[in-house]
Amino acid sequence: MSYNPFSLEGKTILVTGASSGIGRATAIECAKLGANVIITGRNENRLQNTFGQLEPIGSHMQILGDLTIADDMGNIISALPKLDGLVNNAGVSFTKPIGFIKKEDLQHVYETNLYAPILLTNNLLKAKKLAKNGSVVFVSSAASFGCSNANSIYGTAKASLASFMHYCNKEITPIKRIRFNAIHPGMVQTELVENLTFTAEELEKDMKRYPMGRYGTPQDIAFSIIYLLSDASSWVTGTSLIIDGGVLNRV
Image (cartoon, rainbow, N blue to C red; front, top):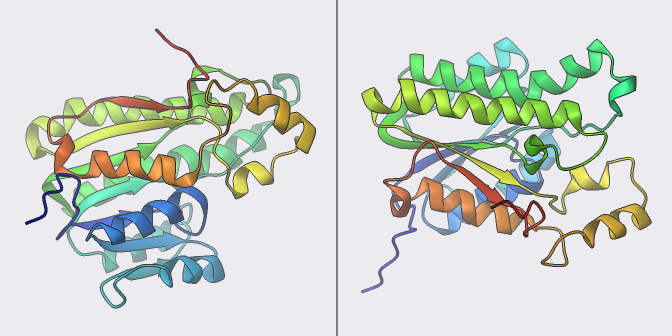
């Protein structure tokens, strides 16, 4: 008889931003651990690519949509069954020095990285789509601690997301027994990193700041998310988990 406290057998889990990177890895690994996985994303081809990697075939669902569009969010929520887990992962990267920030930059990043996960969580609660004793994981960032230059818009959006998590824990958890936690990844080798304006030499230099000597992988982050979704973390709520290869070196 096998024993696995990290099993997700029988749990239904929604992963947003599952078209690539952390979201894709999380969806794939959740499926391997027995979850019925529902994925969303706004790129149809990439979402289908993720969906094709979910095993076993036939027990999962994909819903195309853009969470920054109210009608799309409404359609996604209407199509959902009761959820045992929610991974608020969808996000966009953005770098610009403080002196060059414009209002439209704030709107672009905050709509996806902050407003959408807050409103999705809010609407799922109102629709009673989050099951009692469920788990919600917000994918924040080590950037929320101000650990790199030209990253203030992204970092402040992610810091606000983690703050929202704490308020959910205070207001919702005592009533619904739903757990709310946030993870703060350091730099992870995903498409978002590849789309940044840094050169290969700059990225290599930055990587040397990490005591582990490398950036994280999407699987590194996915396994931490799975811990927070599983019954192994049934007494963990209101927590910010830093997964950064030691770069912040916080005491």
